[in-house]
Picture 1 (cartoon, rainbow, N blue to C red):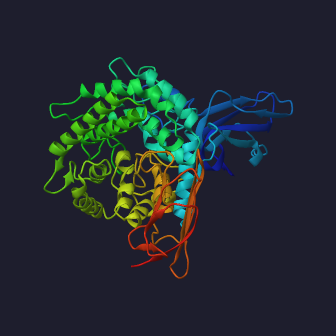
Picture 2 (picture 1 turned 135 degrees about the vertical axis):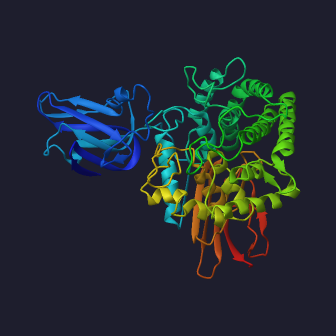
Picture 3 (picture 1 turned 180 degrees about the vertical axis):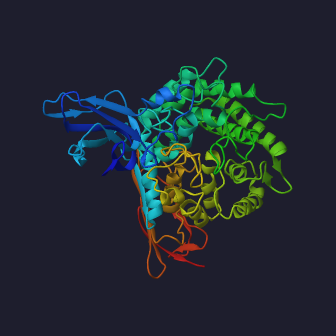
Length: 546
């Protein structure tokens, strides 16, 4: 923490973007008025809220009060004040109304607040940029979890549904959030209207049905129960949501156009260097593809719940939507998805729009699209959720790692180069007038990618919680990587290190009640010459054959 005198008071910098309140400890005079103004962003050396505040007709009125705590001293010795019934998203606090003698480091203590989330996983490696990004993701996740996942702690504090759907896998890999998710699902089900539609935020007073929702956002209704089964073996959440899921799938059938396509909500939100809604992937593409994915996951859950008729209905919808996308939004001559962009191409591969025989040609087109952007990412949050996993599936983890960690814009590494301590809402060039929130979690799936691709822990590869595969990527930029996850059955871990002779030593740990395989990337074999074997706890020596 540092304290700096400014023309408007004393600026306290806590060094990290957080959420909570500050405890004030002061010896003041009777009726001395002390103001604390919180912010995550500085403008002209002072906290500024323009990056997170919506300018409306009441802008000037709200500006006077937003993120401000006021304390009036009794003047009877040491006084300690902790604000109640509020919390702020902040890194900086401007304190006015104090003397130079009072402006000590002990005046303020930042109290970080969030739901109690037990540690369930972690990742580290030999690259400090990746380690920092893992820490930033964890910080954004925790400081946006107040009984349900919020979008940001300083602007809306709303339960945006897409944010949670995009983040659920990496949060469950890292943190014990299942109880909060289960309870929030009750609110999501209750928020569904008579037609089957869902709002974009939950809880809501009614806002979010006319704008701010759609399949990518509504997918939380199915994504959360699916991930809770996959990671925690929880079917109760799916049982709770099953009637609402059926109702929602029926609702989607009433919103299709004459080609069976859907285009009814928000799309590939927050692409680099553009306004949030200026996405390259057509809305009809992202909405229909994600509706297909919802139908696939719903069918899986209905099978688990012994609901065969509902499962068959969901599978029929999936087949129908896939056919519509292939007919109207895929060029089968070039193997390009509509929009000719990274998001469309990666989503079409990830969500199995392309047939197995087409995947190689489709992936080559994805690489071409990445090359056109000089190996930078050019995706919104929907494309960002799948792009790096697709690259890994085709043996391009090195490229994915470079795109994530490179220091120039646009990249996650560029956020670090510009002083970020949490994940930002937007990829915008330095000096842009459009800054946005500096503490969002919906870009955080990189943490999942680190664990799954680099350390190789692939939980429930076929959807079953008692299975885990180990498929590490020994990328050239790293000398070691390790991760762990605490499943209901016990601790799972994977760690590898490259020695000076270029031999990889892989150590695996898994509970005796779980099973899976260890599968090596192309170009690597175990000492016995195999590249695939049943997973057992132990240490393995791996050699390169290239």
